[in-house]
Length: 286
Image (cartoon, rainbow, N blue to C red):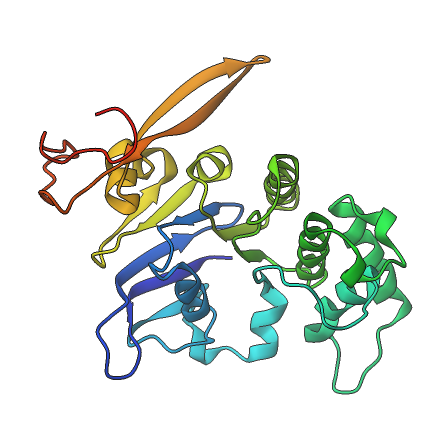
């Protein structure tokens, strides 16, 4: 499946654009990470791409066909969506939560079949959470709930996963479990994915492509290794960073080290990613 957004912009009624001239393309098996500071519009971007909010200009396309030309049921057979994890107000068991992912394949008032039940169990196994069978979702940890929601999206049998900050509010170990699980599933099943994330290191580790949203409304899209640079991260986050690669246990890894906060109120001008001397670092060593 090819998933595209072409020359799209969004703003609330009567307001200026929050997102401007967004273009991206994700092919089969590719992972795209979306990066940007808090409040820049990452979740809004996902909501627009998924048709929850209408683009002011431009459109989303699936396999070259505009989103509005697709039937909703056909779209949700192709795409599995994982929103930001929130505690369930309902006492679903883990497998019942996963079964909800089969809704797009069931007719009105239809009940899940034995095959649906088996698939739900398989999806829990795919994310390593088969031990949660029978457990209530409001009684498991945040990391476990996140994995159950990913399993629910997989129950759709999708060609693409779209995840909104899947590793947020998790500790180091659970962040790695979530990120590694997403990459393993995409590699093994040939599924593509779009991920909102606050972690440049995660984006570098698993993504083929990246989109960075800036506070001034501009954006940068392309191959992850060429988009996720010190210059682009400084502009997006107002943080001076260093990107370094190193070898550990026979594999290459990349870390993104924040050096300090950039105070652009003194002189906001940035030329080729080099900050004038009067642009001081509030925390860190200039």
